[in-house]
Image (cartoon, rainbow, N blue to C red; front, top):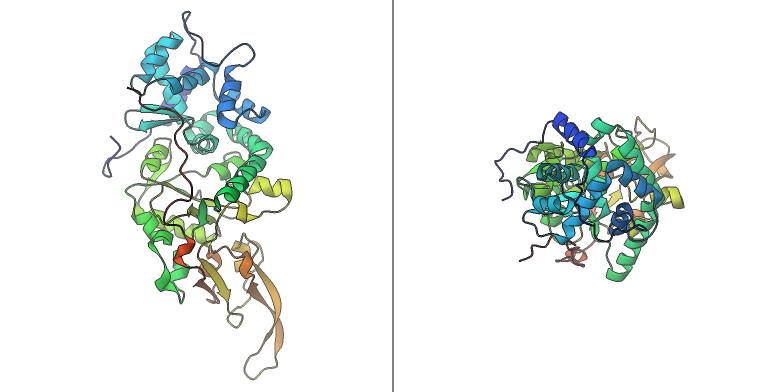
Length: 432
């Protein structure tokens, strides 16, 4: 049974996890161990598991990461799960590898903590599956667990960063472009800042499925996870140029999983505060592109850290957000008469330009007329409508209230149902 709302979730103490990793490193298969499916002298277990993660394409960076993080016995144990029923998984793996049951249980728990195994029941660890959602689930699950970097140091992040810049940017771009071309949608939509909508003239047009308050309210458990991307680029530290916070909100079963990996359970009110601050920092929140508020994760992206964004900028020199996201229904307008050309203390840029990641705002010479004075030419902010993706961060931080949120697209812009089928879990099907 899943956790109930009132049940307290606690991870093991860090020292116990560190002792677990040390034990697993020493485990050996027994003399009567059976052959591992798909593994042969020309294709070792790391090659087999890499193929399951990314296909047949070579990736020295991913291989280094897997070899550093997992012993061959760990990889073999995870690989065996795909052909085993959900009941008695540890017992069956122990028989195949000729190992004590307690050692196999350690290996499976280690896989859960390192982010490659996911249990159907998080309390009992019943029904482990190996990365049912793909390699990016591994990217996030591995780097958000502080028990790993406190044990091993920044190496885990450096290895992930090597892979991300070598493989992820281009492959992710290509796969997203193919899907958006095939299905007419990117699958995710920009989340607008609800505070800006409520302060604007079109507040009555806000829908529950684009209202951040409803996104928070419709869940029963909330957690604030370490941001895997921001930890990756800084070796576990925090050097994001846009925010000082680790902003990755997880809900319900996803929250339960990250709490068990040393992330923090928070209240509904704290979740809403984190959402508000993310918008004020100019981070790009995104949600599934259909009429729902009930999803498991709300991340906030930036151009310096995001695994979708930063590698593509480095490789191509620019970023086209249309390959990743659909626009929100909202857009900003700027009243030049109210604009005061304010400055962000950190960057020296106008505040709206400082937070806008889509480069939709610039300063232009404008004739400013004040009563009793000669007209003057001063810099004022202008928005390029086609470049505005409707995050509305600029409207939340404008000190003169010169920026307003306007609803520019009908509700039909957002499909009632997903435009594509959710990826099915590839394994772990209970067999009779």
